Amino acid sequence: MDEFDIPIFKKNYELYKSLNGLRATVPKQDRYVVWQRVENTNLDLTELLLHATALYKTEKLPVLDKASVKLNLLRVLIRLSHDTKAIDGKKYTTIQQQIDEIGRMLGGWIKSIKAEGTQNAS
Image (cartoon, rainbow, N blue to C red; front, top):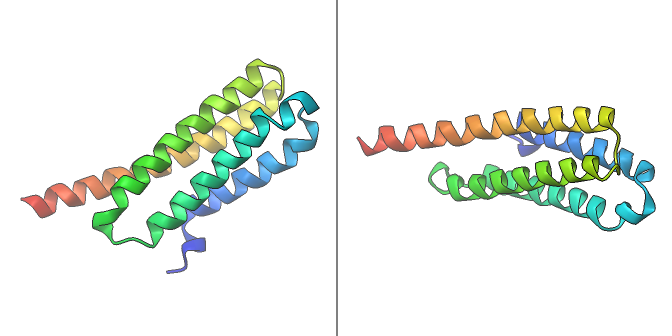
């Protein structure tokens, strides 16, 4: 299976395109600090998701846990961007919905690996 066909990767890819499209609308004082961090965190998440697809099932969990931390950091950075008025409420809501969907997918992936681990242990 091609790692680019994995639904969570596609969703994260679309999220990056959304974030990148907003860059020009972010005020200059925020664009090169917080917003740059938003985009870099999303790229880090992309890297972790690709890494996880290349691993054996037994090795995926630590990488997916790191991806979960990155996703939570991204949530905080987006909230901070909204609270400091770097992005408006409509854009914030749209991005949060995308992040929430990725979070549900990531959580399901982690849960399925943990479930397989408990089945294999019994």
